Length: 160
Image (cartoon, rainbow, N blue to C red; front, side, top):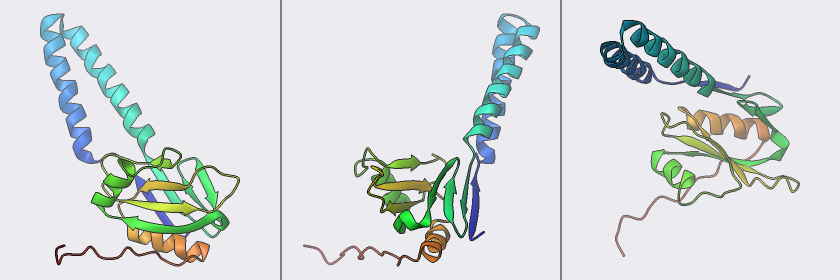
């Protein structure tokens, strides 16, 4: 295994969900009755837990392929990978996005890796994958696929 990362919901989201469930206990319990309040709280926690657990995604790079969740692509189809900072990730996921791209983005992870594909049979031009360690993921992809790293030119700061 060259790279492994698991993107899971941060602890603060769990605390917010618990706080919401407690407000349901109070609001519903006082309005309809304590039994209904407990039921609403349990239902809220069950739904939240299911959503949070199912939204976790595992990213793995081995000698043969990259696996992001259930999606897999072999290294021979990878033309390059670029680590993106938070601003570039926001732009590539928004105004500069290609509608055909494969996106695996999580709102609680600000950075990502753009994986450019080279497969004439696949209409997907690139994958955009959230990562807390985008440089390490891009380096693992370059090492596994034999591509050379792509760097952007630094932004000009000397004015017009």
